[in-house]
Length: 147
Image 1 (cartoon, rainbow, N blue to C red):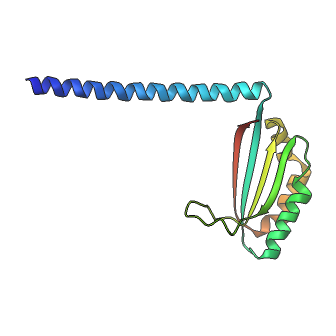
Image 2 (image 1 turned 90 degrees about the vertical axis):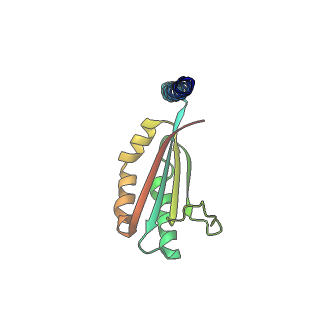
Image 3 (image 1 turned 30 degrees about the vertical axis):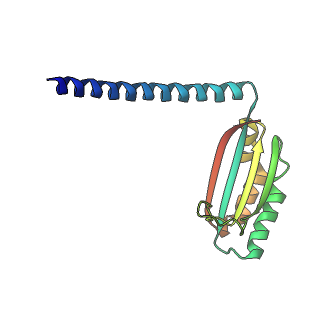
């Protein structure tokens, strides 16, 4: 009888701890979402737009051509606070490094409105039209970041 009560008590404690952990996790997620909204509403949130291109022709010339096109068409847009484009660093070959790309494009916009304006801009569309034929794969990562 004591062992049944002890098992019941242990099971109850385990269930309680699990529920408490889930409640704390949900509270933390709500706090993070509220902080992101507050930062956006206060104009403090920036948008990081990271794009990784894997090319069909990944020769040095083709990579340079895409980096040059990034600079020509994608830099100096209104609301851009950071721009860079370049090739994958060949020296970074740790097991953890993702090496499934040839060219990286990194942009940070002052806010979502600037990001959205960039997406619809004629220069952005021209960049896509002129370069998409050599894209084997394109991965886009957008994130809300704080200054």
